[in-house]
Length: 205
Length: 323
Image (cartoon, rainbow over all chains, first blue to last red; front, top):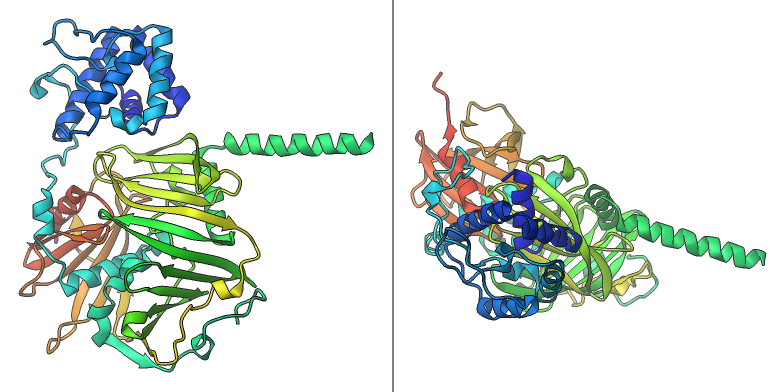
């Protein structure tokens, strides 16, 4: 499967594929069993990468799609029996349109964990970045550390130097106010700010 | 008859403009967005969601004689207000009866990480106009900025169809989960924002005013440090030596600060002397991830609004060539 198709599938799963492109994608899938198999494998890899993220309401969602398509779940040839996502099944033009309509109603992102044939990951052709030995830490590993004063200062410096790239976060800057208080210098109040503004004539004084 | 014809032409031109806006490329939308962020006068309520918590802010923004006047007021917690006039912001903390004055640049104070108009030139992302939508009661166009790999986050941006002003922005991870979201619940785009909406809502008579000390200094330098295994697309864009404030009783420390960017996401790497009690491993700092480790006798930390594996990979491959 080429990168463009992977990108399209990924965008579809995340709800970021335009409706007309989603319909086109479903049409292609309905007409090409080989592509359906490739997509099934690709999605399975994604499902593994996402650590079998369970989405509440997925069973109900599948039921609604099945109902909309008016078809029985399909067994993918040569693979273990699966209660199939309709992404992987041949469908008529009408069924494709119905699937698109259902998807539009419930949100594309909820389709992110379809049931697909289980394929040993070692058997699959996977494009792996050469630096892929790094693993995502668990939430506990991340939250176990509280940022030190030096790390908060680093974050501020990072914000400062990222201005030109559009990275900017004034709210988080204030989080460090208390820690920085010892570094602050007391100054005279700005007379323009001592009283709340009550005039309504446009320009700020 | 002539009047009717002119009216028809005007209506046709209007529809033509609207249609061309709807058919604009993501690049054109983002360029229009950059202009809109810096030139639109608006007032409204913003909901900001981060790390599972949400916060409501009242926002007013007006350009007066070419100078940005802006007020952000938290509707919850300590009632923080931020008043910006041009290149200066006044942060008002009612619970501490304090006002902190800080310099500011010309960037938006509201949107934390918007891709810029030249972002489509970065090959690490795919950009698309996804669909028309509705946000804060206004017709919007959703733009998706999708990374090609797991080393950066994606963006979803809902732009006002009429003005290209960002009505909602989301920073999303590989799993499609929202890291940070800024969304207008209501907005008025209007040139007649009153000055009372731009000033502090409370009397500051008894408040103490502060500014930052001048201890911080940064000098552009060259460095021997380099990253052997940068994720694709990231390149060094700046290297500085900075004097960082130290804990009480200790001397200031000199820190090397290297910034890597892929055109949208940026990561700062800080290289400093080792200090007892410094962070090691991963730490969450707001919406930023950080990773720290000891490398070649130095304490190396990477910070940025990128996934954990990105900061880990960069720190783990920082090297100082032996002369």
